[in-house]
Image 1: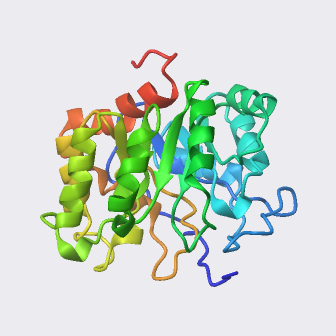
Image 2 (image 1 turned 180 degrees about the horizontal axis):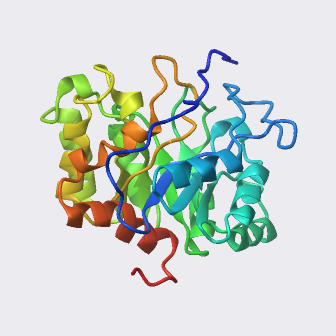
Length: 294
């Protein structure tokens, strides 16, 4: 497994952009600490420890209120670190889990009680081994009964093959990181047009306008990625989410400053109404529907 990861930024700057009250980081992770929550033997990479305490301190430093913590492949289907973080969050975090086909109904109910509201299906071959799609369909049906949604992670070349399968899944589907478009091809590229058409044809498809640091070729301040995110925010304002992706696992080119990532928000959501939808209204509707948005 690869071990050439980079540690997360030790002292991100304070953002210049002030997020609206109640803002949500809708895509972040906790890793370990490995001594307490060992990483999965089948993992493809080994990250640095990234504790819940550091995540919550970063949240406060960035001027955000809530987190959606996503289970990453390095912990496999052992969601113990995720549940531990949710338990410590005092209601200010929700989770997206990874489960196997043999997960029991009791285990799903326990995850739901802990604050899990979604399950993640990963199709990125360098990160996970292939899972039969019938397995994903069976899991999707079970979690849909709990009111959960599905988060999918794939790369743009895989979208044409995935569209028929994803169109059959029940409930809301959230696409990670804009479907990882090829930013060198531009927003008018056929691949990005296909992704937009997929969203337009399927009103249950949401998208995270996250991870410019993974998509960029130019590097910070991510001028090559901003037009893609802004296009999605402006075209689908009620189905977009934003997140830091802290602690940015498996990065090899550069480690982003999370304060700088927050400062991309007004560039992709240029009005207060779009910023509020992106950071507050949409994530609250998906993850905290029981709470009134103030």
